[in-house]
Length: 185
Image 1 (cartoon, rainbow, N blue to C red):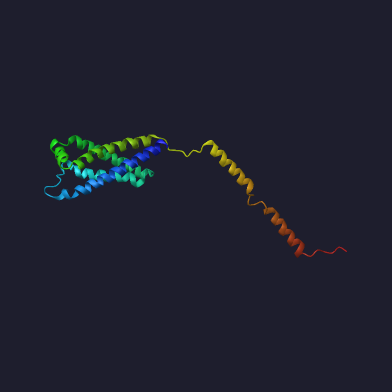
Image 2: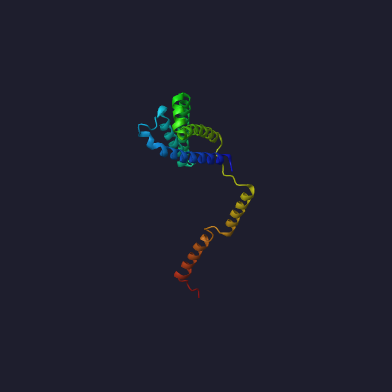
């Protein structure tokens, strides 16, 4: 397994787990969002948690194989990770205490999601610095392929092998059978 494949697998695995866990937490706590005694979305924690879950979906769509989606995912992780880090730094004690006591799953997911986005950024930077993989065939396989190509060329004659003979055959047919020969008696 190459390092590039390892990075792709790691990105897909952690984003898949985070997407499923985040979707569960959001759907589990969504009903409390619109009630009077429900979630007080201070510093937009719940909104940013939802956006982080959506951001985890982007790498899964492209399966890390489509460059455009990979760039969008990198930029999304860069933006969300940067803003969530700034937001974690700016959150006051009352807001963090509120989430820790009343909605600890959402708060811990928000912190872990921010860490995952920063981890995604690091993995994408590694992925960009690596050269593109070349499909290499080991020497023994290359010799076997070359031998098979040689056998195939020797086994199957070229398409124009009888081309000249056919023309001479038909020319001879026309001359011998259609044009009566003069008797030289």
